[in-house]
Length: 195
Image (cartoon, rainbow, N blue to C red; front, side, top):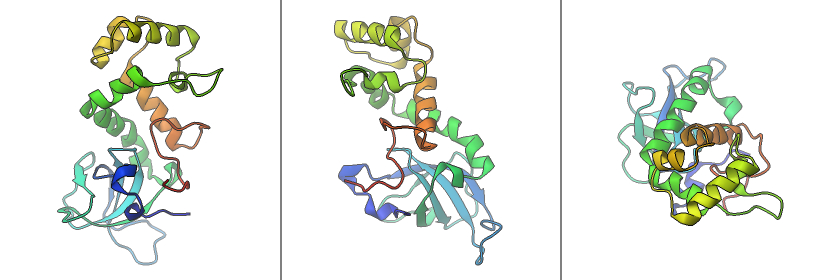
């Protein structure tokens, strides 16, 4: 089931801005009615979208407004898409775009390390991050008990075993977008109602 972005309401994480992953000047090759298309990743919940641009000078990794009201570069959001619907160019650009979004919203993502809690009696939500096992988890929880993390640099310095937190978050987002996950901590699962 394809979900239009207008179904996603403000309090549920409406995507206001997105980064361009690919620009297809004549749309998809199998399209009956060829029209320019852009593939986008939203900044709030990493929603993958396909849209019709208003202009032809859209650049890959450009930040565009896709919210309600006047949009300068995007005419119409066509649909929400899945990871496998992305072009190869879009798939190649996705990790870098996710890193850009995470760095631009550092406080939000550092906050995850400060506030994440248990999923159930056996698993903590931080263990969803690739490479975070019981030892890493114990080190993160001990460090945040002393005081909240203030930045990615702070996390790396105070949790010596942990590799690059931005890389861990990026890998997690991609795994969730591919649909390889039972739990979704950073994205909105494709095909679920927006409740």
